[in-house]
Amino acid sequence: MAMQVVEQRKRGFICVNAHPEGCRRNVEQQIARVRASIPRKDGLRNVLVIGASTGYGLASRIAAAWGFGARTLGVFFERPPKEGATATAGFYNTVAFHDAARHDGLAAFSLNGDAFSDAIKAQAAEIIRKEMGPLDLVIYSLAAPRRVHPRTGQVHDSALKTVGEPFSSKTVDLKHESVVHVTIEPANEKEIADTVAVMGGEDWRMWVELLLEQDLLAPGARTVAYSYIGPQVTWPIYRDGTIGRAKQDLEGTSRELNARLSERLGGSAFISVNKAVVTQASAAIPVVPLYLSILPPVMRKLGGDEMPIDQMIRLFRDFLAGQDRNLLDEEGRVRLDALELRPQVQESIAKVWVQVDSDNLSRLTDFNGFKRAFDNLFGFAVEGVDYAAPVETALRW
Image (cartoon, rainbow, N blue to C red; front, side, top):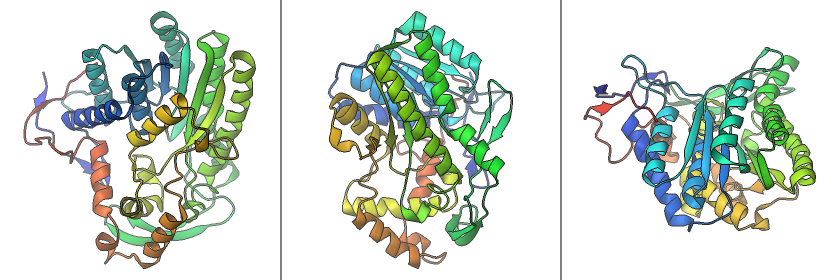
């Protein structure tokens, strides 16, 4: 037993510990949303989620399990508790997922390790073969800053930079909670290539090829990878930057995989373009924290604000099960971001953007809500949790 009072610890803006009870409450709330929104459906028996411990990946796993009763395998890379230190939030999220699945009679398997590696892919294949059965759905939701290439051993580090020209804009200095101007320098060719190697489609392709080779995909199997396009204000650093180059590669991979799965299994591959939400990854991208402070109140006023679980409910219920083709754009991508990119939403954001500064940040935006949402990711500031009470931190699933 390792009972202790867990007080939030930060290094700059980044939280370096996690609260197990807060993480549990977050998972339970998402399960409740799925139960209320997806009447138990058939069609998904075995689901693999690569990047399954936080954000959209965790929400996908919850939607598959409690919306369809699917057996799920989650793959992720999280730090377990050690010598009085807490685990990462993703680790505690997975503990909570397994506890709830066990209570509700749902089969769940998890692999904690480097999803880019051949070793983890081989272990996943063994679990699928021995414990699950051919997969109906493969979700690719991996977010990592670094990749060690399994074939070459080369280390690739992603870069959050522009391509071609420097870019200057407003952002929030999260440490000092002020609006500042930031200039982002363009990436060199190696930085662009490294970012594509980490965040592009090669690893997704490797996963699907392995599953095809070992006959671990069911007839009609589908695979989906998550992406983001965003509004014009973020394009220089996102859509037109190094991340955008990686996302273009991801979309090209989607077309290749779609052709292969269609020919072999009558299956399909597609991209789901999701709404901007507060994640550990998005908070690190310049410009985005300010955008994510302005967006929620505008969305609440005009209707349509969604958390990751709400987006995944729509993806699973309306597209995967309901086959709502209206969610597709002309390039065949599922556009869960349509409400965010409505002209009236973006026009309202643009009006705030030109006015906001350090003095009116809290008045014109929901920066406090951004901070609370970020703390929630680590199990802190979660409603209903007694943070003065000791909790067990040395948990396992």
